[in-house]
Image 1 (tube, chains in turn green, blue):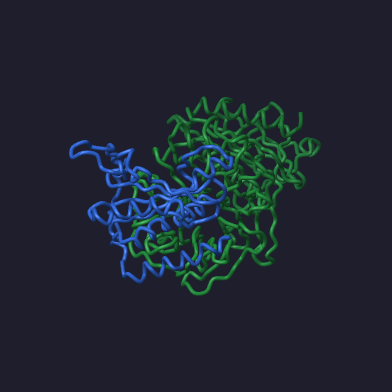
Image 2 (spheres, rainbow over the protein chains, first blue to last red; image 1 turned 135 degrees about the vertical axis):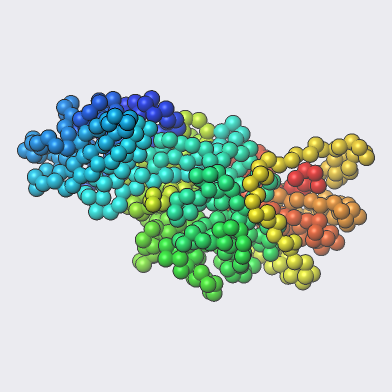
Length: 427
Length: 171
């Protein structure tokens, strides 16, 4: 049994324990199918405190770091080690760990916990810092994600994405559920259940709202759904089809595709549904708009050249520049958070595959070996790309790192999963 | 192959622009929260007799126009069917239809939505040219989302490359 597999089974144990503790529905299972070449070895001790809860907490931290593909978990041994215990750096060095985490979970009288931890650099024999989070039994997982984010940021040098959420659609028994889950697939909750299809969910930049297309009125209509209240606003219900919502980075406007004036064309509309304005006029299909992170450009799919390719136009309109040139089917552009690269779906010999382009050099890399990839979506730090694909005739979600090295598969026990969208950092 | 369809599409845009038929004002309600389930009226209410489009013996009972792969023009074998619906609609100006375009499942959902729109727009354009008023017609797309045939072989794909006509009360 490989180290990864052994730790993965530990992770699974931890997750099922947590599910039992928190009453959460473990609807999405995540399987790690590939890991990075250079993984940082880290030992995360069992935290001191009531073992049931503290092991659940450390399981979340370990699973997050492991799943990122950037860490290799070093066996911590059976003894809990708190943030105040003396660290035997020599012993951890001998075990091959470059970093070590000790901590504790202390219950107070009010039924709350304080989760404390300290992160150490083993070779420098120095503390890299530590934090205390007040949490509750129901919020233990959230605390674990925040601790994992802290460790990730200290050791990798960029923000972690473990506290973010994902949205996706499950088709099951003739029903469509728009679900919101934690980035690790846990705590899935339906935001909308419908007998008709739901596609193209898109997170508002503040993470509080989702735009999507629903077919509940026999035609595609764009809604904005406030997650905290469940309140829905019609953003585009013009004559014809309304689809492909994409948020502007300021969260005040969306780009949408409307057919109200003939053909599928891109418009800008305010988030309350007012002020729809046509971005440009073409006699071709223009759809799948996507803002660049600076809000200055819109990338989109168009068949103006005879086959679908990705183009870029200024948000003020004007002439569009073609972005993709290789092949006869390049669609679904998604810009990385730093604006330097673009994920998209490319058809190669009949296979639809996730690809990434470095926008400066125009270099394209195919990231998968699957054949029905759809709907890519970047994690908030740009490291991972979530997308839909098909395995054994069922829709599944996969994630791959933007360098193609780390691969994960997320699946629910039944039904088709599709249309993933990775949410922004929590504010 | 695709180029053949483009002049027709461009022509359709000119036709639409030419007859000055601006689309209706946005059918937008500010809240729009409660509109979750469609009110599916039963077919053939039976009060004033069966509508011809609900009569299995009538040509109007046929509502589907099928398209070739990557094609958006109406094939000769469907001209008669489209003409029959046009004749009925021209004579019944209070009757409205919804034309739903569909595609097979291959490729991007949103791009397929746009391809399905080209199919429903083609049927709408043909009906307009035959004298049906703009207010009676709405063309929309279901893309690949509502396949009539499940499965991923050519037979299923062909079944799903389709535009359907729905009459008032059916949408």
